[in-house]
Length: 208
Image (cartoon, rainbow, N blue to C red; front, side, top):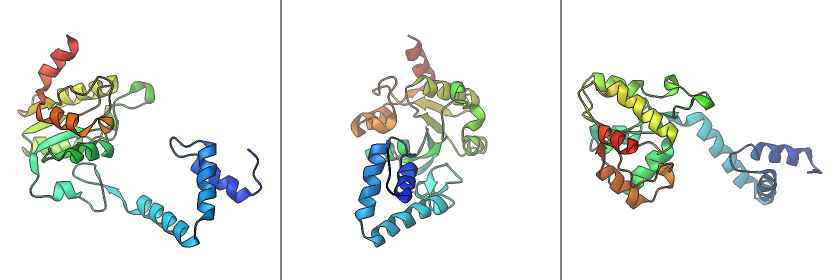
C-alpha cells in the first residue's frame, strides 16, 4: 500500500494495530478522521488519553473504575457476601445487562492457558482469597467461559476455595460448551445465573 503522506501512513499503521482492524479498514478510518473538524479529532484524542491515564482497576474486585473502588463494590445495596468470578470487564457488562444479579464480582483478568504462557499466578485472585479468609464471602459463583481454559481455571479456583467453608457454584450450562459470556443473550445468561449448580455437580455433568 503506497502512501502520498508519511503522516497518513503512520496513522494507518497505528490504527491497524488495534484488534480486528486490517490495513484497509485503518485507511478508511484515517481518511474519515482527516475529513472531520479539528475539534472532533482533538476530542477523540483527549478521550483516549483520559482512558489510558485515568481508568484504573478496582482495588476490591479488579473491575475497571475511575476511582479506587468501582461503583458496584461501593453500592451498599449489593450483596457483598455473593461473589461472581468472571474473566474480564466484558463479562461484568454482560451480566449487569441482565439486571438479575445483585452480588459483586471478582474480575480475574485471564484464563489459565499454558500454551499462551498464562498460569495461576497471572490470575487476579488475591483480593477474593483475602475476603474469603476474613469471612466476608458466603458464596462464590464461577461464571467462566465453557472453553477448556475456562474449565481449567474454574477447577483451579475450586481447589483453592473448597475447604474454606463457603458455597461454590457454577452457572448452569444453558450456555453451550465453548461459548463466551459476552456473546450470550441476556435471557440465557440470566437463567444460567439464577439456576446455578453446586460446582461439584457441574463437574460430574462435564464428565458424563
